[in-house]
Length: 96
Image 1: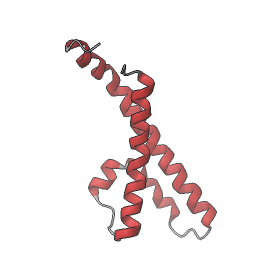
Image 2: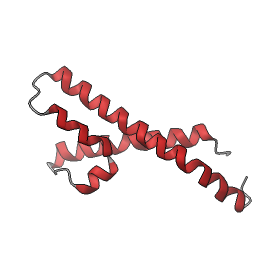
Image 3: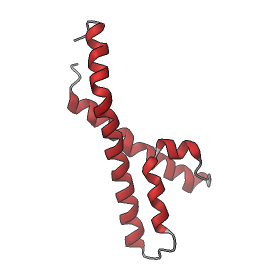
């Protein structure tokens, strides 16, 4: 299976989606609070401060969607930045 840039970006974007979903589920089901490690894994979660005092369900859902998409984009940027390093490592090992 040949690894392409698009596949690499897809996997990074998927991780960018799964991390916030897992953290939200953990928060809702287990009642755990957000700490430093959650902020590292989900950097755009800091934008949830904008929900303080909101009452509208539509605004809350929209804001969560925006924050999760921002996380997907940030993970895709990390994937894009690591792509040349991955290609270099694979070429050095003769896998490409």
